[in-house]
Length: 213
Image 1 (cartoon, rainbow, N blue to C red):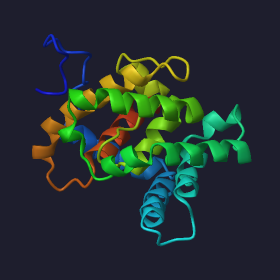
Image 2: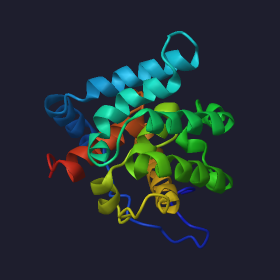
Image 3: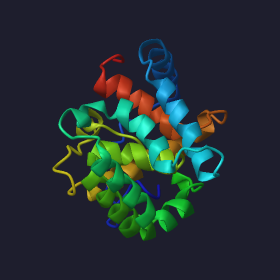
Image 4: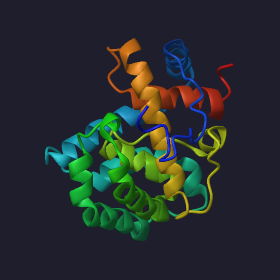
């Protein structure tokens, strides 16, 4: 399957065989026990409005709605002050062309040709937001393309995170694993609006919170 294998044909790491039943169980657990999903839905809508110029909020402000809630642990040790916010704004300006081109792209269409550009942009984002915040911000900007993770999820997938700036290759491998998961799961759940979000809910419930066996 394209995306799950390296050039040699060897499987990179286990994809944990996420099932449609597992996604459904995670959705129930997530809705029951994770109230922060409200902020994801709000941030997703605000980013869309900001990109269309249909709100007074900037894209950076819309992204900040999620970062301040879903990436709260990062800001226990890093200030979310004017300087940090300016760095987020600068990121969005510097990589505007790539981000706009990826906005409506799906993970199914990713190929090896995308590796350098995606790894480079991820590295730039993680130097400002950390590896977890980088994935969250990129997902908001291209929700059908960039998967979400956290430190527990990355470790569970055999991709334990290093220092900020060193995780571009790990994220690329994770993206390919999720691509493989999506290719298997899509035919089983054609009504799912965003498999990347559903897979993240499963990973979060199982690996981060331990709510699933």
